Amino acid sequence: MSTIRLPLLLGLLLALAGCALPARQAPSAPTPVPTPTPTPPPDANLRELLERQDRLRQQGQAEIAREIARLGEAAGSPAANPAATLELAIALGQQRDAAAQARALNLLETLARSPAAEAQPYQPLARLLAGLLAALQADQRRIDELQDKQAQQLREYQRKFDQLNEKLEALKAIERSLPTRPAPATVKGTPP
Image (cartoon, rainbow, N blue to C red; front, top):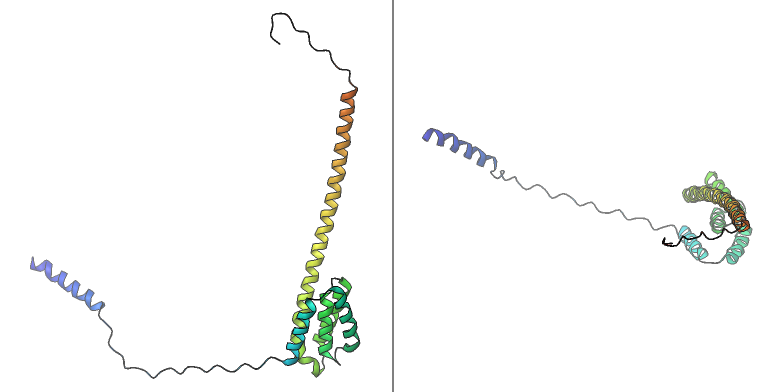
């Protein structure tokens, strides 16, 4: 019996030894907390530009058209006045007219490629807006194509409906022109 208890006791001691608490370590020096680097304030011109765009977004098409006329005179060339060019492109992008949006995309791409030093701060935003506007135009083209396809299908279905309706009316006319049959005679004693 003691021979069975000894291996069992040794196994239990080994199992408990594996669960023992680890030895205490000396406390290490506290890790320094990194101080956050202050973020630079946003560019005042860019902030002002975005605020004007937000106001413009809430205006009607007539007000946007007046703003585009005003900005068109002020913008000049993209290299000479990049802020006004960007603002004009944003206003043109608000139009629902494909030609105005194409002009906006052209202005944004020209500004994004401009080698002028004045245009450098505006180029990342111009590239972003150009990419978004190009994607919107592609989506609009796909939507227009789908609408055209659906309109064509609707015309085809309407044509088929009209043809079937004509056939149905012809069958009704044939049925009306047929002489009416006399009622079958009933024999006495048989139920009808």
